[in-house]
Amino acid sequence: MEKLSIIVPCLNEEQCIRLFYERVNEVLRTLPVEHEYIFVDDGSGDRTRKILRELSDGDERVRYIAFSRNFGKEAAMYAGMKAATGSLVTIMDCDLQDPPELLKDMYGGIADEGYDCVACRRTTRKNEPRIRSAFARLFYKIINRFTEVEIVDGARDFRMMTRKMTDAVLSIREVDRFSKELFSWVGFKTKWLEYENVERAGGSTKWSFKKLTDYAVNGIESATSAPLRINLWAAILFMLAALGFAIADIAIAASQGTVTELFILLPVLFFMAAIILFGMFIMGEYLRKIFGQVKARPMYIISETEKDKDK
Image: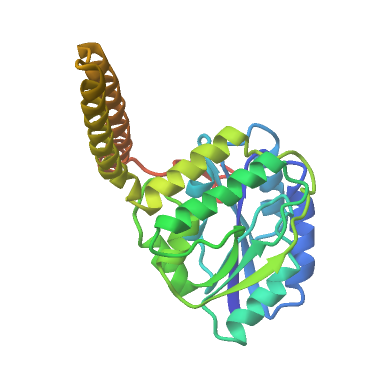
């Protein structure tokens, strides 16, 4: 019998954990697999860790990893995948926006149809602010324009993978991770399941507009070097602007007989300064990522696991 590892990143999810555990257990009873839970407490400030201890006491299949502070969902997913011992690995959100019932179709896609991964994507964004939805769609259009692999619009982290694919993802040692791109980059045969957006079972979303913006920017930086080409396009624009000023100066000189030095110099100087500063900004962003990688800090620090709860 195969073993399924269920990785569950948690951040202040005291209202959802028990309900999630019960709902998923109902589905797992219908699957011919052994299973383990790996809850990853990403520095919660509520009763999340206490509830995880209680679940672990009552069910030996429940394991948990508690970070010393908030390191982010990417670090939580990586820690969970690294700790997973199953031949199948699933990543799920604790708020039940990832319908547990889809686990049946995921297992069937791998066991019966031969896929290496069965992933989910949302077909609608109802119950989501319109501005956020618009920016999300724009993000996918931009990133797919420049990346070498397709990142499906509406793709969720909710997926089931074989051990081979999981190990391939873990083999990538990037610090600033963007897992949606990494899942596509490693390849493997993937089936997509579609479903409509589901409201949270409790609590509130931890993704503010600022956090989502930072996540999107980090994703673009991690997935493509295309922003470096902005300097090239800026140089072309600068040359066109210089040519335009030269033509304008010739036309003014022909019609009026003279051109003021201020008219010639000021627009050019300001434009050059803007281009240089913007180019420095782009280079600085990539230097920041190189600096973070060279420091080689751990992606997360564990302060407690289920093995430590009685100490």
